[in-house]
Length: 83
Image 1 (cartoon, rainbow, N blue to C red):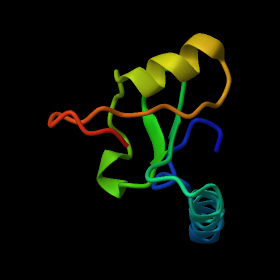
Image 2: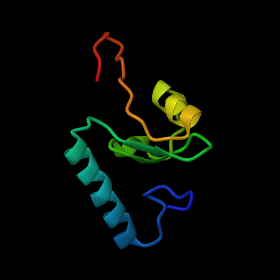
Image 3: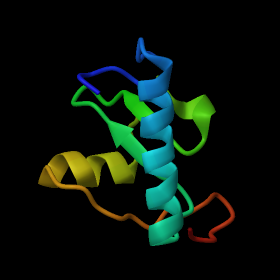
């Protein structure tokens, strides 16, 4: 991705290939959501496309950056439920 978000990739076929790969991981791992960040907290890929390009400060980001490894994080929603 070379610090480009999936929507910034110049080759549409590269973007489709990457989107397909991430969608496959979401299905295979039975995830509700998947995000990929750069080191400046920018969302390079997100299951919810409107989040791509945004800046992240949530617990998931802090966990991933703090360990330097991919991880799964339980998200607590405003109503107290968890994903």
